[in-house]
Amino acid sequence: MKFEEIEKKLSPVHRILLTTDGSVTSVLEALFGQVEVETELQKVIKAGERVASLLEIHKGNNVNMRVVILRAGEINTTYAVSLTPVERIEPEFRGYILKEDIPIGRIMKRLKIESRRELRNYSVVRAGKKLSRIFRISPDEAVLRRNYNIIREKKIMMNITEFFPCSLYKFNRK
Image (cartoon, one colour):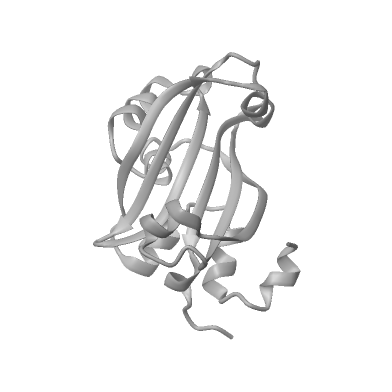
């Protein structure tokens, strides 16, 4: 569905979450206060054709896959999956991303990593079984989904897919 088609149903906060090219962590902290990370899964995988194409690397290259839930207090605000080519992870960044539960935006700010975010796509999807469990919502409820790349030195440093429960972000609808 095109953004223009769903835009009429979205609050300003929904639109910010879907289209920001800045740190989502900063947006979440402005809305909810301190945001913490719970790492659900972290492992190195071999890039298949789809992941290799997505990250512009060779098939078989090592990729760090990180699956996290961002939460503010008891509220699960975001579910995110990041894919990072291991060869493009700087040593200091690697230490943070592999060992600590810190949002990526906060790590990049702390290390003063210059980069840009390139939005690839966004949509509204059904929560389904997994996201309904994570967000404590009905499987039929709407969830915002966006996918973007973090670009550093003209290469994809990371690809991230984020999910946000629509019902949590219905602030000040115009």
